Length: 149
Image 1 (cartoon, rainbow, N blue to C red):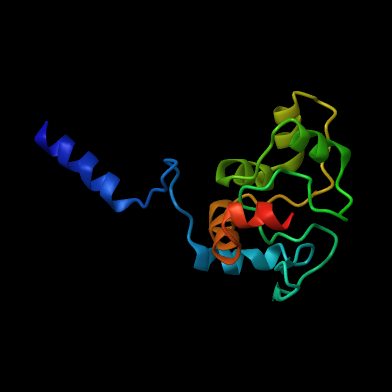
Image 2 (cartoon, rainbow, N blue to C red):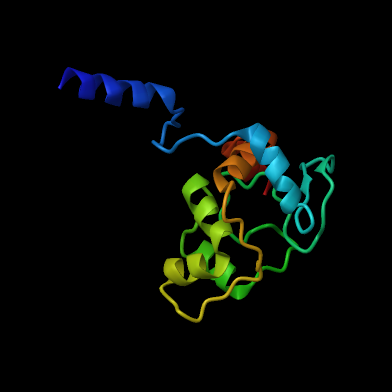
């Protein structure tokens, strides 16, 4: 019994955990993984400084942490992602990771609509938590993002 308790405690201490109970991703690994994303997405801060030069097919991912889905002004989102945002979808780690693993399946589940579609066709099967950690590391705190949007 003592061995079991010691094993559980050691396991809990070994895994980094965020305040919300999710394991923390690795921002450094996420920066490398983001190379798959930058063909469509860029990261440009509110002052226009380019953090990561990338494509413009997808929205700018600066400030995504805590942002309502489908709300960057001037970007043409798909109707279903906008509907998800209007229904309360906020980008947090769990939602982001689930979305990038399979965008269409995520929207179909979130909206409870089997015909929901996503304009994002790429699926990031592994490394979503690391990409999230990277995006969080290069973005402002959610309160600062709300003030600029």
